[in-house]
Length: 151
Image (tube, rainbow, N blue to C red; front, top):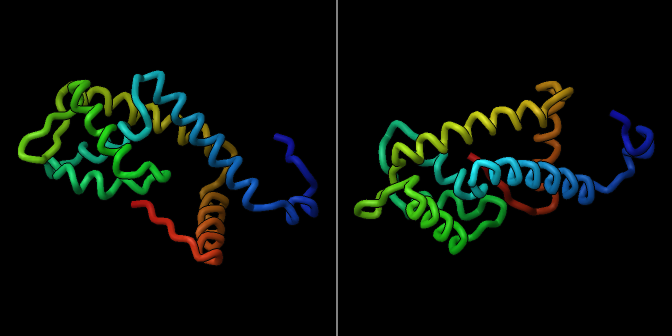
């Protein structure tokens, strides 16, 4: 890979631009790959939350957890949850959501894809470099008064 600028020039590059460009590239690639499985990214989040050993989850808990992901919002998450019910991937009883066998199969395919995408994104990047990057991004968020959290 060839970098866009020399090290001395990269030091002066704007983090806003490069964090946006990284976000755009990663999210676009992820969403495009999930679309090939017939999934939206928020639907993947729902299936991933429901794939747990504790059994069904309260719908409002799932919405509360996921609505902040990439600024999806509550209305979008409610619609995406409803989409998983309509497609037969989840069922809802007494406000509790659970995966169906079909949903588990889609989740399993999505999980394998996410593993492939992780490896693709991390190619040539050591765990140490990744850790430094995440810590630096969290420091940028902190320094600018922002808030971010991911479970």
